[in-house]
Length: 532
Ligand SMILES: Nc1ncnc2c1ncn2[C@@H]1O[C@H](COP(=O)(O)OP(=O)(O)OP(=O)(O)O)[C@@H](O)[C@H]1O
Ligand SMILES: [Mg+2]
Image 1: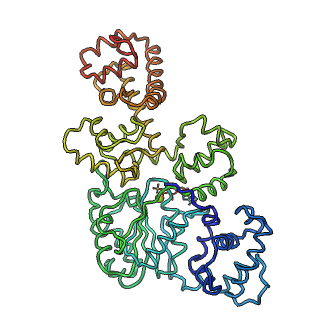
Image 2: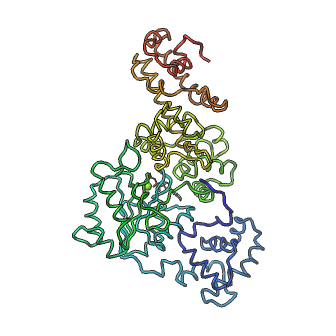
Image 3: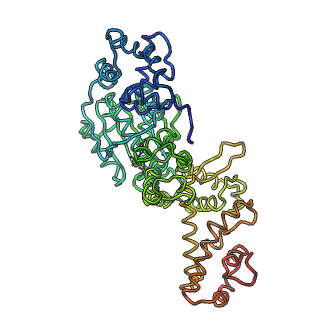
């Protein structure tokens, strides 16, 4: 979830990418014998990012004069004291240099790693926000010496970019860093052989190698070895040994760390993880407001424009989505965010669509059906309502498993209220809605163009408009689902010169359910009853 926290706390968070801020604050506080104020910490970060004091004052909504007084009586003096410089000699341009000479950033103080093999890792040139996530991961890996850490979250949310930045920050704590993507799935034996060789163990004993030296293994695109078409967590045929390896890496003693990046949460990690245990996982959510605004600024947007906050909220801070939508808004709406929001419910860029397509195709049939229902309902609904809609009469444990699995895949959101309710993230909602519309249109096509009456699954199963839905939801169902499908149906009838009478004659034997009949009435394909 996005959090709009104090802007001073959030300002210039990117300084954490280059500097070990925790250590720096701690040392400055030690030398000044008092706690740094939030404004001093923010100024320090701004100065480390090479902003001038005037720019910092502007950003923090202080007057330049007041900020200068604040800096002169506090932060500048502490930095002089910390770096052993004479009092009152500090100029702001010198801060990074002085601190760097004084063995900051942290990495300068540590030995350089013998080797970093970046493998398929991309170069990440622009990176914003994610200060808290970087700090948490650094804490887990460096300080708590976790053996297995997973970063999981939906496609495009920024797992790979975050891990690249993390590795850049902490690599000096390891003698060897290896990055591998499993996108082009390889048998584990081959992967292990490659890793062990890199780690200097000719016998292919990975664990022995990880015991001998402190290494960081990053395994990206882990979901590639997980099975599609089944609930989240099971392995593809022939890839089960990845699960065994994860269990061993988490349970056995060694001094290395394996960082897993995955769209789905591997179940071994779920079973082994714990706050006090050396196995942890971080569910990566969208970017917070400040970072997302920086990202939009880098795309040429003024983040103070009307509608920008709403835009970020709508896309849940998903960096891929924001990058794509920024392009659309610039090209088609001349950068007018408010106008874009007025005209489009949510536009899905091609890349995002193909990401969602990949994720959707991995789902089991039950999971897909749940998504269709949630897209149709368009509002958070509880388990009971979902069970009734889907006409599931059993105890519903399969349904609960599937809902849990969808959460592991980051496709549905669970409300924190007393009565648990489920809904789709807005971007997923848009995608599934489109998919539902496509499927129904295909069935209507088959009826009208090919007189094929055999495939009426969607029309049988899902009501185009729900009688029992609240009025506002019914209105949306009519506008966004029924109306476009109805328009297409009529255009098709006209194009093929077909009358509804002909269709009805053929449909008559097939229409067995009230829901199908209702849908056909609504679409004007069934005229025994007047469409309501
Ligand atoms: N903090 C960030 N600042 C700027 N850009 C970012 C940030 N995080 C991610 N991005 C950009 O967003 C896009 C998607 O990020 P990334 O590839 O890391 O997502 P992912 O979660 O690894 O997706 P997938 O599941 O498809 O591998 C990339 O272009 C990346 O550079
Ligand atoms: Mg990735």
